[in-house]
Image 1: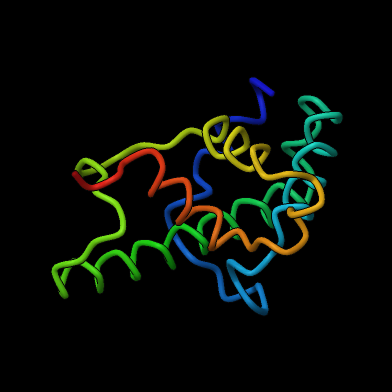
Image 2 (image 1 turned 180 degrees about the vertical axis):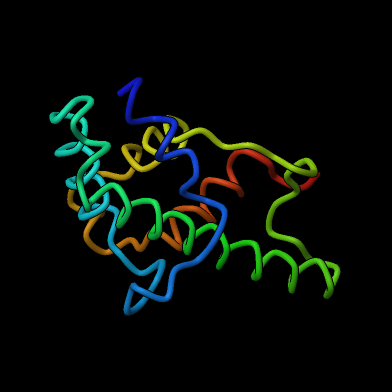
Length: 124
């Protein structure tokens, strides 16, 4: 995953209009594509699925950021990450794998990213 990881790290920064419901891909689908890319090794960088995963992750991250900004404006943030937090693709993938396999199809990437932030940076 070492060669694939840098490209997936960008997966939390900007949304893409190319996806019909950006951020709504299931964790099961996201992990299946990520595992298929990992199996390709360095050739994964040339796969169209790399861009799809990046865009989906970016959209999910932006959706959570917008939600968090709204929560902060109301004085009730669901998480308290440090300013300019950096998240690696390994962190995201490891978090996604914490969902039981039977639950993964029902959890969207948008919800999973929110859950990751809430667990990693709870407000005290």
